[in-house]
Image 1 (cartoon, rainbow, N blue to C red):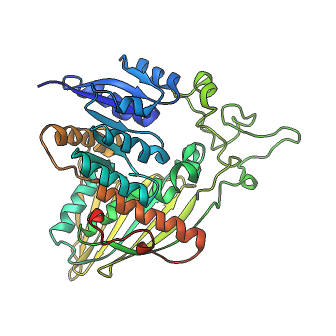
Image 2 (cartoon, helix red, strand yellow; image 1 turned 60 degrees about the horizontal axis):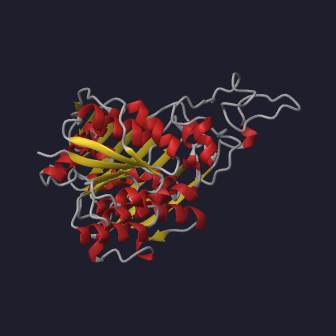
Image 3 (cartoon, rainbow, N blue to C red; image 1 turned 90 degrees about the vertical axis):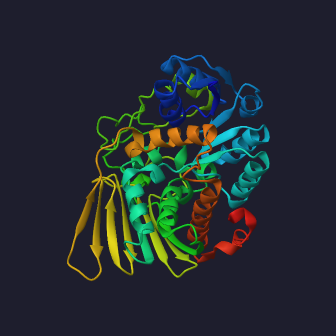
Length: 408
């Protein structure tokens, strides 16, 4: 069987270390990476050198998408470019894997879904939590009726990555649409996965703000006349700051910064940002179920927990502990599921995502997450961001016709 010829759009850490690295290390016998696309071509070249490969390098994603020797495209560019890059790849008849979110707007998601249907090509969504072993077991238990009819799901994320998320492009809504789209799309999708494909969101409320990462909360005393920041790597207080996070990735250096001025280690207290560092979104579903998703970025903990409440019992799923504690409603039993260790990034999810993407192209295996799944998670994220900004409850019907054929 001929090798699959692959192009990768976006050569940051995710594009290089996760996707390109995995294809090179684990799938070199079936996949050739023939091209990279990134407007920062020195960064793409550094990524290729790290992996010991020699793909053609394009500054323009459209050029890569138009190549006749590319069968499939992985889109790992920043969120606000996903729509443009997906439409280009589908327009040129490529299979597509796209990192979450599908797009940063509902309109963008609908355009991608329509383009994929016209092209007749595989489009796989990058919801790595659907491939997480704990979430898979939780989904199986829910689908088997273990908890009866589920009436509530709470998703709580503590992320010690404030020092990265609020130091990089992720801190800007123009790049992400907002963190309830960029980060929350994972958790909204898990909630939908657990509730089941027939259940759809109808209304969203949200409260969020920048509570910690503000200039007045710098975690050290400054010396008069010595200004902190603007980057961890150049800050005169870098040996004193408990939140210092100097970028040591070879993909980001003086040469790459000379192209676009980007460094991934901006001071998270002083940098411009219009996303939140803590917040909660509340969702109503068409069957009466409710859900809540909380995000906390200024925390010593990194973990995700999902609390499932149903008419026959409840579950407490802990990704950090790789466990699910089930409590039947009418007994004192406590049934604990311990999930064995798995290999690979994101709790073993990344290798399985790549395996399934290749299987969907080669053998027609249905992707675990589709573009329609991507649409619904983005729709809830967009509604949450709007509800936060306008201080009101937002109906999903304000964003699009939720009964349309494209939404099914």
